[in-house]
Image (cartoon, one colour):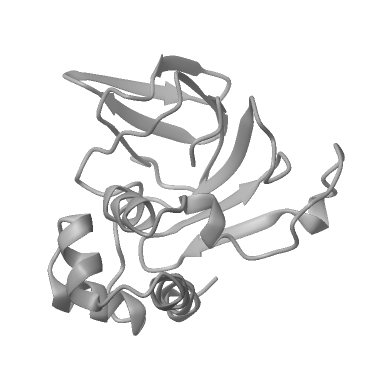
Length: 183
């Protein structure tokens, strides 16, 4: 998904809910100009900003994914819903069906030097686990910082402010597992 496509989805959700740019900006705690820039594909929201926008729209980040809405228990690799932020250097694939009730698994590909953004974010899952499949990932949870390498995992409470960043020289691939789903 390009920045423009993400912005189009946000605009469509805002219009369906009958919200003005100002109302959405106020509810999300961002400026009107920022919302306008996101909708036009000019600005790239951090995960924290994207989460606040989605919540203000009465939605979730998962609703912004491109791809089919999977029915049943099997999600084929080629049918995974996808969310991309090229400017921020990450790409998410929803591994579990969108309507999963108790568990959500997301595969993320994070380019060197990139991540969730400088602002920590929270969400309504009880617990979250990140598993590094390839590369390295710095994860900040509250006041703690963890450097994870291939094969390492970390479990933490999703309601504690957290952020992540690929400090390595190559692409990092991780699995995010959250229960219950909240992305």
